Amino acid sequence: MNTLLIIAGKELREATRNRWVVATTLLMAALALTLSFLGSVPTGTVGVGPVEVTIVSLSSLTIFLLPLIALLLSFDAVVGEIDRGTMTLLLSYPVARWQLLLGKFLGHAAVIALATVVGYGAAGVALAMGGTAIGADSWRAFAAMIGSSVMLGAAFTALGYLASTIVRDRGTAAGIAVAVWLGFVLLYDMALLGILASGSGLGVETLNWLLLANPADAYRLFNLTGFKGVSAFAGTAGLAAHVQLSVPLLLAVMAGWIAAPLALAAALFSRKQI
Amino acid sequence: MTDFTAEVQGVTKRYGETEAVRGVDLTLAPGECVAMVGHNGAGKSSLIKLMLGLTTPTEGRIRVLGGDPASAACSPIRRRIGFLPENVAFHPSMTGRETLDFYARLKGAPCRDNDALFEKVGLEPAAIRRRVSTYSKGMRQRLALAQALLGGPKLLFLDEPTTGLDPALRQSFYAIVAELRDRGTTILLCSHALTELEGQADRVVVMNRGRKVADGSLATLRSLAQLPVRIRLTLPTGDIDALAARVGEGAALTRLAGGVVELACANDDKVGLVRRIACDGPTVQDIEIVQPSLDEMYAHFLRREAAE
Image 1 (cartoon, each protein chain N blue to C red):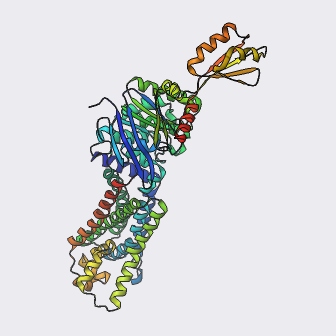
Image 2 (image 1 turned 45 degrees about the vertical axis):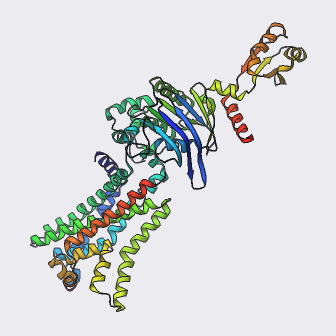
């Protein structure tokens, strides 16, 4: 346990040093604040809109942005250290390889968590100071959005680690990371939409499973259909009634998307000849 | 049970088609400083990686400090091993102190001893506070040595430790190595700089293309190699014929620049030859005896290996 914390702490400190933490936090805060102030522009008013509007717009944006940040942060984690020669020395220490991998992951996940909580938290503070009364349910939905965003980031960090462990050079790892982002975030939904539009008669059951096979979709469903108030604004109320995926199941799927790539990466890494 | 610090038995390591290490046997005893010499790609670093447990042997068996270095339960073993890798790299955004503290915590060594380590390897307090990215090659190498010495290792692997160090630093480096050896630490030292290993190593292991071609003390290797000893004489008169008559059949005579004559003879004939020249040869102004250097012996063992 101690070893994990030492490695995670070092990773977090490094990320702080090379401005990763500051840059991501500022980016997240800027986006969140912009969206919470301008989110109701289409309705004709500029000012802090209801929390639900912010959640809808913010979670839609998170789906694109956070996986990209997470992959950028993680694709270099293993292959980069091998490349630079720091890995050989590290592995000669009394550290098991899974500890090294998990420790580094925890550090990177902490960077994502920090940036998300502080950045989106800033928007929350802005909303609270906006003057409009906000119900406890809305706050719960907002907190759930932040929490699931951290999970989404962690899932893509884990995928980045897997990419970083599989290959032998950094360029390939970067390529895989970009492909993962394109595939899960952009192409997957387009393909799904295409299949649905072509009227191939995809059953609800199959669609549910296909949505679970993508961490970004699990995140979207969790935030847009998990809370009644939100789904009314997201225009997904109808969908929410049809999708029979419960909140615990969606959370479990996202947790699985963190654990599975990480476990696979650890297994591959422990067999890798350095 | 054996008393050896490290034991390598019939170890072969293949990476795909290439054989990095081929059937190597090697034992390291406590308090021994062993020098491993060989070209690039001779299998030195591969052998060290195997002994560190970073890779596993394709064939053969390795025991280090009484256990298998690649097993899951190797942490107590690794706590007592120090390693200075070739082309050492550190995380550039951390300071010298943070780097050493990080490695000390990983090894379970108390961080309060780090100041003494910094002083021992000669890193100034001002340098310790700076980021590693600003370090010169020599400073990085000092930091690398400091991390290898963390926790008072019983076994120390030094891979090309003196590359990029200035002569003064090399001296202090070998002083540290000698001190450790006297306290019972086993040291395996890889180097290209053969001449500086003379007088440092108790034993020399010559590697070539993954194979161990020679193993023994410098004196043993000398007698094995049977390389000629060279005697250099400065003759004021230039009377070479008189000298040649004295020398006889046992030695080859070459004339060098500046009135210097070189005689090459077998090590056993050396004393007799010097006596004959000194007692009743021509006047000799100066005499110098040159033992075959490690460089020459290394070249000899490689030639022999190639001939086989």
